[in-house]
Image (cartoon, one colour):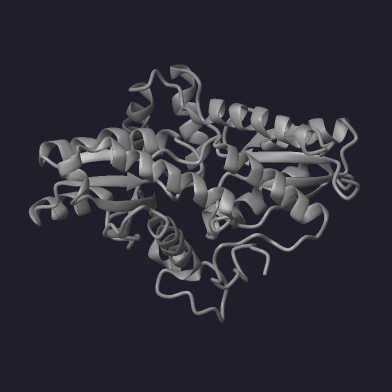
Length: 339
């Protein structure tokens, strides 16, 4: 890998103890004038799990798997990890890489899609971290959105099948699939993907989410009704965000007589706090109260196909190879996504 001399995993970060919860949330919301009462409310989600977000351990597990896969495939790159909002912080990691003599970094964000929060925000954080290190800071290339790479889609298919199989047979027959992703402001969604692209009213983000739902649903053993829903909305009620909310849709399906839902967190790479709380607690409780069967598919996590995808993406960039894509959806030209 002569062009790059290190691999960097960039993630969101999360607390690993109750005393870290509020400081972490303050980092996430800095400059947004969020009332402390609201931080305490969100903090309760973490306190329910002992103040420990699963995301950091999931990053450690992914890094260990990627390191082993690199070695098995003859990729001689040191592996690093930096977070946007909690230790290990991205700036600290880049400083360590600089000290280690790293000059050219290939970085993977833990987000598969194209929008401001999952692309541009990462680019801006990288730029700030590099600026803090001065003119001789390492160069960083951010890997493209990988939503339609086989290594992202295949684990979702396998995990959706397993979730369907976990339903009682009488519920499985009439089950409805809800593909869930993080809601964002509609204006942000509309702007995703760049100008001049016919992505539809929800921009590249909505189009990519719909495409992955189609790819997964089309690879199941039979046809199930499916749709994209959203979760984890924040911001003022007056600001339009992507809908429908997963809980609202479960209520509507219950009224229609649907016996069960399988929620597929296709908007996420791993089972972090917004999956564990918003889906495993809130959405599950909604379904239970309404008498609707409920199963939640696992995210890609450290599935072997996902780990192999990381290796494949590194080769794609290092060797300028043709991208592996299951979709013919137009490439992003905005959100800092490569065309």
